[in-house]
Image: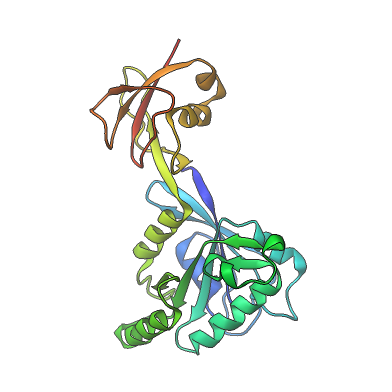
Length: 253
């Protein structure tokens, strides 16, 4: 499965970041009920259908316990997964987490207009994971928390213990990364549906050809496309925009 981007789990101590990494990937970080179990970044691969997104679990955010290199790692991510413990003052955690991030020039996009130093900051899309939504009893807490944050934030109540709402989480990660899956069809053969190429939304046939191999791009004459907005096997040019799930047969000559 092709890697499709990187998301970083950020949050205060004991919000369950490492438990989420363990539940969503094959990584096995140490998980314990005391702060700062995680001292070094731990990566894992989260499957989303037939692709994978890398999740990274760095040490928890704390003004006294985090090396500057950790913020460099966070700054270079494609997506923030901001984790709060739904059962322990999530709004307080959320505000403190964002204050620490902004101090280190990492700004979630919904806060873009509130930062005092935009030219030196890195702005990243963010999803808020309200962890420990283990049963229906915490659904009301999750709803109230979402209302308090407002429409500019996407809040996903999840449970590392039960896997609750993991399908929704993966769907939102896929959408927020702004990616599409495109499948190759060798001439005269069936499409290779088990191994998509991952491209950014708005990519064209030419972008797909370059992803497959630079020789295809250099000698590309046309392509046949099966998928959204075209007739099956429709002949297209290099600039034809592709959609998620499209199948492409490249023509060279």
